[in-house]
Length: 154
Image (cartoon, rainbow, N blue to C red; front, side, top):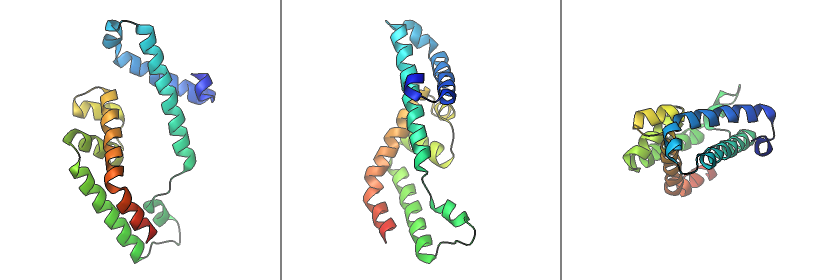
């Protein structure tokens, strides 16, 4: 894991995440024809997830609320209207998703719930919850991409 993640602190955190995933899937691992390979795949996936998380954090995405929170800056009426239009479009897009994807996306993005909590709510394992969130976000990008680009340009 240290070779993939490179940062020793991130590697330690990633190892703990992988150990939790292994613990949660212990019965499935015991039944697997090659448990060592399964555990290795879990560890590698956790390491790549950690790298993706670090890249997202380094890009420092700025949202409209954080701009509005800056002292002396308040978005004008056009920016407020654009933000409201985007929010309404996102909610309509979420409503158009299949039920489990919609619920997973709402819990993850709107409520900022961890994947294990989403899995408990949906009655599935954590990997399935991650899949529902990922597929839901991808479908939202397809549905909303052109509209959001148009709103942010104007």
